[in-house]
Length: 118
Image 1 (cartoon, one colour):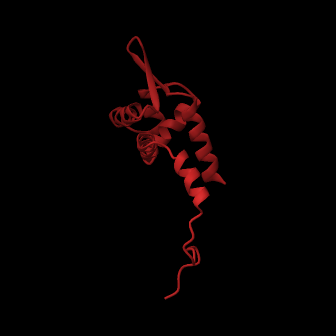
Image 2 (cartoon, helix red, strand yellow; image 1 turned 180 degrees about the horizontal axis):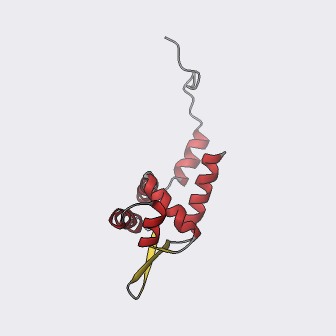
Image 3 (cartoon, helix red, strand yellow; image 1 turned 30 degrees about the vertical axis):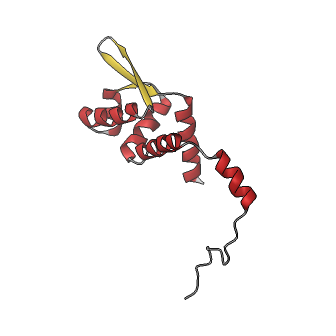
């Protein structure tokens, strides 16, 4: 049986590379948080919400109208994004406005968008 062309034909470990990268590996807790963040972005509705918030601060009603979804469904997704620290909110009287948590979220979104559109 032949091996696939994308698999090494020999088993040689490049010790210098392995040692260097092992020293620079992220801590397990950081890796877990990254995996959770990317997991939160695996749901299309949450991606749509982040894209909308990339353009402007919005209330739940605005997001609901943009996505043509119920306020309850949008609120649920915002709660997930808030728990992941991807969005934050501020209250103004009876209104609650959402924004991206920080500039990193917008950068992450833009870079990922560029990647998939190449």
